[in-house]
Image (cartoon, rainbow, N blue to C red; front, side, top):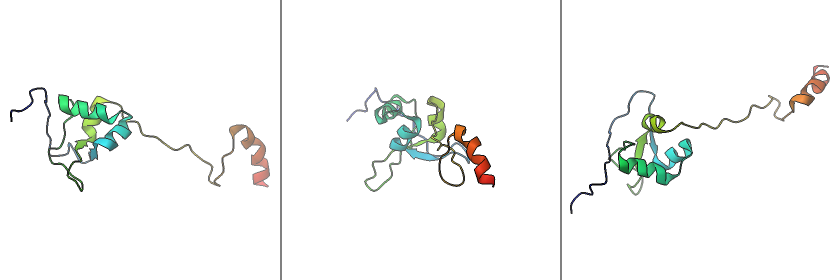
Length: 104
């Protein structure tokens, strides 16, 4: 069977550095807030290098380097809103009025 000329997959087997890590296509789509189809298209087009060794129970999970993903698209890390240490949310307007009652 001849190889498909439209596929230009680039394979990598090592991480780029000590701070780099492997992520699955699903995790990459969640991190970058892109569709899985977009990530897979980048792999097929050769824009996003992929590890040739498939992992997981069924050996179908593909892995990409986080550093390569960050070169193509911004990485969106969702941070939780800061909360007061006592565990309940207080609006900024009511903080000044509550601060006097908390200090007594």
